[in-house]
Length: 174
Image (cartoon, rainbow, N blue to C red; front, side):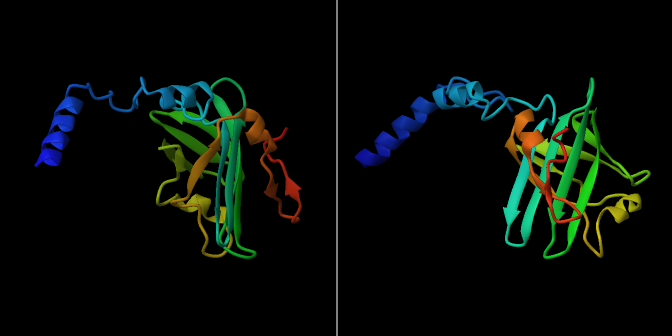
């Protein structure tokens, strides 16, 4: 009975603390403040600059995004679907409402509205048919999710990806 009373007392004490505003996190939390000061987390994405990466059993998915003028960025990405089955794409990025518009180079009319949620970039579940030539065989970039690995432009420029010739390149490096 004493434990139940103590638990109820603690719950009531917690009720007096105001909840953080939606999307703001607990701004007064020392851990949250330290993470923001060091650039580990940010309150909201002002741009997509940075590196995104996911390693899995059949390979590695990666994307780099770097500034390319006022209100514009460029990107390169690769997604692995097993030995010899890889999607590669490059293009430009612009802000589109509360999302980002990826326009894929070399695929006329291929664009996608992507969102960054919980530090993960999420491509839509289906892409226009104009995007079919981005990937070989039955592979597709539809539904691809890429966790943010870094907010740093330097990290994005240094991100290495395997090129068509099998050599490692830095597609956002220049």
